[in-house]
Image 1 (spheres, rainbow, N blue to C red):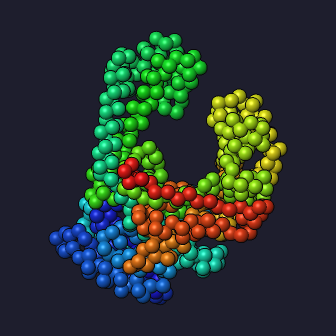
Image 2: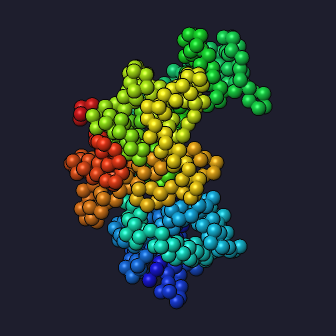
Image 3: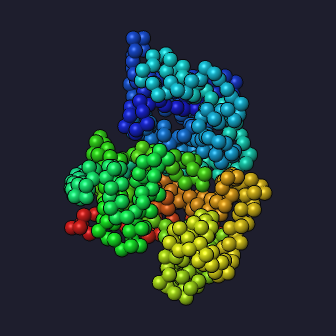
Length: 555
């Protein structure tokens, strides 16, 4: 039996209640539908969690495959609600149709509607807009909508599964979906907040906001957003204000404010610079308050469950929302202690391996600072480390001389000269970058070490090498996560993963710390031998493990 599963919730927040659970399933000849409602109306009493758990469990036990579209939304919520006892009940069964649509085809969007449309499945009665008012619908209308979701997920699931088995091996397909479960388990577990630290951060932020407000009043501003005050201030220090398209004074964070700051830095006008930097700091602090501190103080059980999505990005790195844990500033110390397992210079190590650049491999083997080594190789001067670092990452991100000049604060001519030196010093790195771009152009995709494909982006051909590198690092993190998850059981968890920030895996403390030696061994051994041995000496991944969030007295 093959089954598709979907839920409807009152909103996108993890703590928004589940309103409906629905399935469609088939034996190959006939299709059945089943839905459970937790919200009642006059004709439909609510069902209990126990009833849904028991009836759904019976169906899942019979299913060979369970299709979900964006499975890491549904599964953690089902676990948190007690409808699934754990993610492990889906081991070897789950198939994320959104992930495999991205792995198999290039589409403008991987939403359920767009994937269906790609396969020619159109239904004018399938109105996705009703989802925003799900709690206002009658049970009958909501169940009819949910039935279409599960029906079409089942249809595209069968098509995608067949193509996935043809393009990849069954082992690879099940492995990818094991990662879906590993991420779902991570979301369901969540990351623990420290209320004490949150309150302290709120107090410190509010005190600083008050100090900055007083500063603005001293300089004649009615507040940090006072455009007339800004115009008076800029003219008083002989700076011509930048204007918006409608003629107002611009205080744009990406353009105008850096422009004003650069002028004042050049002039050495530190007193006026304090005001510009104060406005930038004020905005930053207000965002910390409104985006993180205040919402986190109202989290029901003090645990944040970010919405990670597998297959949400071109390079198969996890995307994250509600909240975006990957964007929380590091300066914001708000967590209970956790264990950070961070790949050191992962992208540069992978780039060195792909390009067989032995000079870089030697520097890594000797545990040197790669940017300092690059500065010595390019300029014979370690003090030029920052420029070397800018160029190193510019190569990875496909940037040219103009972007390097802007990032490093040098002229375009200097940037072009340094870039040419870098090409002459590390020719294989640059050749591999061009080769990746040519391959992207010729066959339409790049294949990552463990098989996934990244499809060509005609508007960003210069990103071919970057996509190869980022995609490979994402695969290495994925392999490590799957190994850890597969060694956990429903009753015994040795590797309690609570977060993933790009090249870093985070685990609960103290269990994660107790397993640190095994974790280090797992994470440092996931690069395939054929890739690591392209250089002499071979490239070895390195992982730094530390406890974060400890109070001073605990360290």
